[in-house]
Image (cartoon, rainbow, N blue to C red; front, top):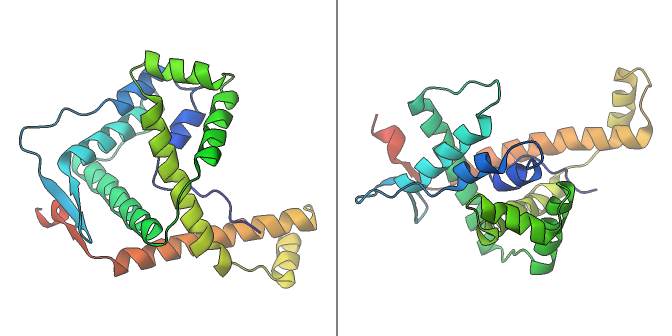
Length: 221
């Protein structure tokens, strides 16, 4: 049984899937490169990889654009920056692991995913590309973000999927808790999803603790 698609740190795939509900203009704002200051600075180091202030600023703006127009509040500026930076750190740890493991995303599968996203929004792939371009985005940038998302999903499958097992007793207990109103196969899948999410969370905490991380944003407080 494959682990479910659990929300990871990449955000572009989720944004693209929501094009029908969120304006492309808002999407464009989220992807507009933040103007680099003449003197960029390192805000964190993950093993030997530096994360720059400009990258953090772009991701913070992306979060703001995601919640724009929604009835959701944001934490303070300092807290938001810390939370976003932590997400970038954990994402980078995973991508480094994926590269070391020799994982990659096949272009054919990536194209299939891109086509599925376009179709989910009632567009052909060409129309989807035109819509992105009209709002200042590039298909290449979106493809790369989706590739990263898919790469982490593959890593999760390898690292977490093999750790999750569902016993018959767990299935029976779940059905009993639901008053018998769920089929056995559905119950097994729901138990599996819950255990996979818990296992993924624990694994992420594990690799975060093992990595060398110099969070200069936190250290500067």
